Length: 191
Image 1 (cartoon, helix red, strand yellow):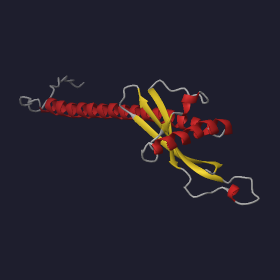
Image 2 (cartoon, rainbow, N blue to C red):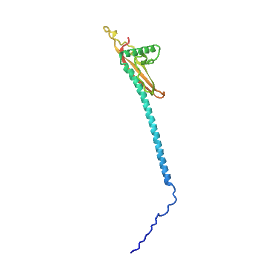
Image 3 (cartoon, helix red, strand yellow):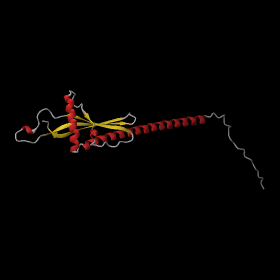
Image 4 (cartoon, rainbow, N blue to C red):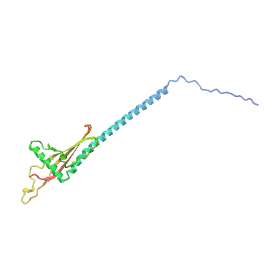
């Protein structure tokens, strides 16, 4: 019978490592710092973009309120009775202004002052919208009436040119939206 030898194996680690210098730790900290800085920059950019979007939405709200005001006036002037009253008074105001030596287009009139039109409701971010109508051009001084011709009793209709100017202001008085629409109204020629 053979001899059995039991041998104990000694672990072989090779050379004992030199003293560690912590380069892995320093490298990890540098990478972690770079990632953290990248995340902070990304968060700041996201915050800035959110502010920009909020500001754009705020300005769009003011724009919408101003356009709503302008459309309300123009739609209201499609009613002949309302148009005759408001635009007739506007023509009288312009003629008075011209007679006082003021330049053309100086007179302005608030179309809501007649209580014939209802100003549309405004969003919470809008302080106020105002609207003024002014005359752009009255018919010329040349006679344009068919009544001057024998046998004719009907007057000629001529265009009177106007502009409606709406202004919207936000509650902080920092953003404004001004919208203007020109239109003409066919009315009897001046005599």
